[in-house]
Image (cartoon, rainbow, N blue to C red):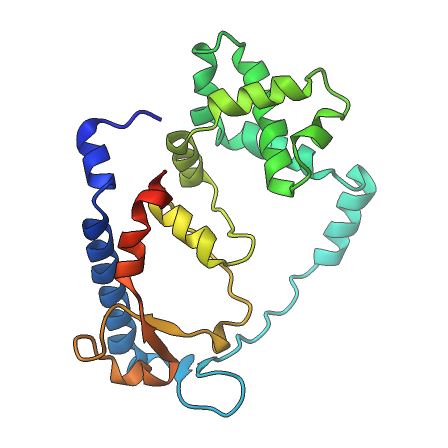
Length: 236
């Protein structure tokens, strides 16, 4: 990915990064604080067990009519469809991989071949199987073929364009994962299984930022100095 000097200078400014982060955190916590009194499905209060954040469970919807019959008919007609086949069909119908396969012109590969390689590469990364294992499957591409395609076609810019078509999952929330994706300007749509026990970090010292209604769920302020002191290493 090419970065012009102006963008590179902006990226390297650690204090600007932390200032933007603090401003965004303050805006989001303020919005939650102001909206909380009108939310009948969410409460934040001190509790001995279960954490401070409480969400009212949604009532289960009734099962659609004939859903079981539909599932049985699909199973009888197609059986168990492999995940890779579903992914391939999705890519062909939505064109979600077009931002990646367009790079095939630069590496003198047929666009169809690039698409097939990228399907295998993303499947390898997405499932955790790894390129070596996927390369051993029944297809004409070697491990080197797949790694070559990954090196030339997978880019931050291309991945951002793909993300505009398909949502992505965090595969488990982690501080490291969210930190890196923040640097790359990705927004993860995370699923928190234990959101009730989670804490909300303050964007700064409590004498500067106050959200009394969120008090039971708040924890210590973030440390911008730690981010700034390690920022060069994270960028590298």
